[in-house]
Image (cartoon, rainbow, N blue to C red; front, side, top):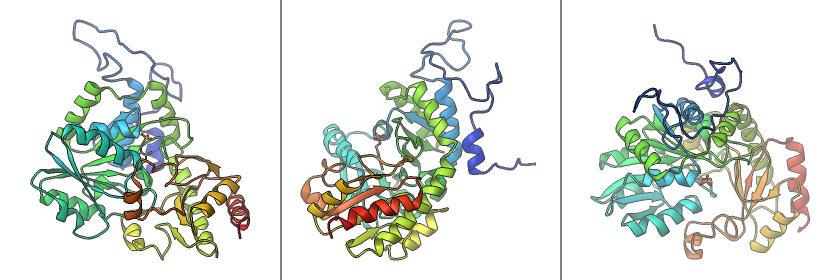
Length: 386
Ligand SMILES: *Cc1c(COP(=O)(O)O)cnc(C)c1O
């Protein structure tokens, strides 16, 4: 008889956690120890040195694997440390095809760091059917996509990208940070590796930096595990514990983020001062149908909008009161920023224009506050420059 699989919210609270066996404490302790006593030389219970393995990190990894539906999860000190570890699967001369509208720091890591080690990169508009395959070469080992993308909230077809990658013997990695496993599970759609910046929705409170990789491929997991230890970009036990705490409310928070963001997007869409609203939950979004198919339970908490020009965008940003002017995203409090002047400055201006990252573009991370308060704040900020 197969055991019934518990639902997402239940697993987020219980998997890898549960009462501490030695004391009954309902909340697990934080194992700060960096080293562990051995019974005999080389004989131990799975823990020897915290960079290699740590009980608190292992609990986090067990929970993350369960939520993504993968066999293995690996936690890192930041999203970029996780992406770097995935890049270390490559050799000099290998080629990567990636979605052009990627997180600015991902672009910088590819362009300014990995390229120096002989890895070659091609940016494509992966929303166009056939674009990934057209860019692939004999040496393409990896396809890297992000969906929904940052900051334009474009949607890439994960199943189609996986097929394209696999037909040419490459792997597909998906940065699923904006969606979280609550809304989208790329491994179920054929991806080989899922990456998250846990700094965002997984932690959910703007107080912990982290990243993770999840895979069901045992061989890939073993190589990632080797590099996690060999390179050492691991999170502290305290950070792992904060992330476990954040995960417990992920389902609740995401529902509210999605409800608020959809209402904010509709409100902005109807506003005369706003030229364009980018939100995959709007019927007018060019990939709304695809988003509805590959995501479930909502379309996320990120909304971007275009105003007339940079001056208007800056004025509105500085007039917002409840939305805090800050980088980052995915936490309970609402944030607003200007990608061109803040998060995406590492993307050269001509590249920004090419991928449609205009001067009047603003990005909102819609939090879980009362909707009426968020709408009132947006209205007063937009009114001020009419
Ligand atoms: C923040 C972010 C990253 C990088 O994560 P850090 O935790 O800041 O290193 C990568 N991808 C996306 C989509 C992000 O939002």
